[in-house]
Image (cartoon, rainbow over all chains, first blue to last red; front, side, top):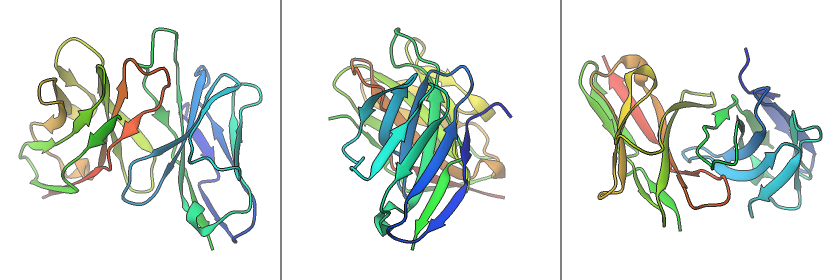
Length: 117
Length: 115
């Protein structure tokens, strides 16, 4: 399978613990996005990388959230001191973008479902 | 501010009948428009997009969507629904003038196709 992969698919943790999610984008894609999706809602943008550079962060991304893409390939999203309100599906997407503009298609992974008890 | 509205939380259609899932948008400039489908406990799958040109866009699984600039709409359609089309459908927009690459998403419409 050459699509976007995410690991783990499910995570249950206790409030206050730290969690880390991994996303492996489609191999030639230079852009990578993280979204959060809660039940009955569309995805909410969290952050975006072009290669290894984190170019944009949403106000939703509090200080407890950090994302990296160290070599411009896979990315990790870490949530420190988790809260019950962090329970959601965390989606990763990748795209092949060029200077021509933001018309590229984002391809999504299966998501990581987080439950904070 | 950019926004997307999907006015129907749920659409029910009998198998074999045509289906329409509605989407309206608001952007300051010209839009890029996208439709995605989400099956239970799965990520989002790309269906189709409007960039420019022909207002009728054809996509995956027999779906199509019509861009209507005057009505700021981008409704998703299929001539003959299948039970397997039952899923959650999301419309998304990006302003061509926007320097960032965020997609703005609708809340989704649950499509139920009854045999």
